[in-house]
Image (cartoon, rainbow, N blue to C red; front, side, top):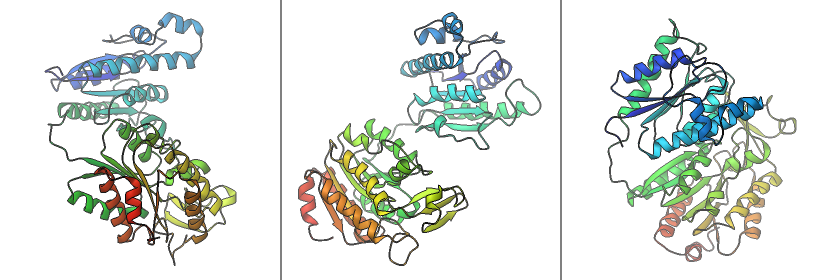
Length: 420
């Protein structure tokens, strides 16, 4: 790392030049170096870039003239995004980037956040955007990275009475983050990842207490459509000693287009060898914003209003089995030692006797699917308990600790034989 810390600024300087220059100067006033990058295509830059749009095109293996000659906006944006990502990654690898900020509207947000997503979690990232509000969904922009989205309120064109304090706040935010990055090194305990939902939190909290007492730190991920994929990215980055994929709701929502769906869940286990304890928490409901916004076939199902933005619906046993089969296909290709634990009484808070979405037929169908589909090297352990009962949490924590210690999955399963 250079002695003086550096913030990279991304802006198309034909339309955003004045705002970018003000942002650059405010950041520099903190004693930081800046690198201003222009990934634009058309128009004449109004401010001099440190890395020009021509250099961005070259980093993508082409020239700006060649891109313009094609006359296809989509290709131009894609190549400039590619070049920008390559430059940002190179700056990081060379120790010349301690934070990144971008400003823009729809295209600028797409380009700027793409560059941020090539950087590791923990690197300061700030997107000042016209679309960081309203009905826009931020998943495509943020992905699985820690990008701060800040609403610009006004369009980003110049510096005026309204935009000036907002730009200054953005400059102060990224400067403060960059000046405090990286964090002082400290000795970390071995980390175990766990997926969590509100409806499985009691189990996670008990597991956390048990494993932390054994010298581990627990890193929870909210299984909301982005949490699971973020965890899997970090698994493949080698950040964890083990994983407890307890809450897998993203799989069933991914199949049936629910709000919290994620594709390719559990595929990291097929690419990276890691001790894994897997369960079926949250695989027993589908999520939409409200009854009116749910697909017609689901509106008359048993349901529960979770909050003003979330209503959960009961899936059929066949739908639950479809999600189980996706899990089974990945688990049968797992590279590391893996044990599957299923609580036979219910898979989430509302799926238990007396609650709104109790589904014994669905639960049993899932259990049968796992019994029939898992290869012997990935043993199934059945625990006669609800997912939030202490007995189940104790079994999860025990299996995780034993896997990390090197005990074979079959030996662990034998310890729990007959408990389901």
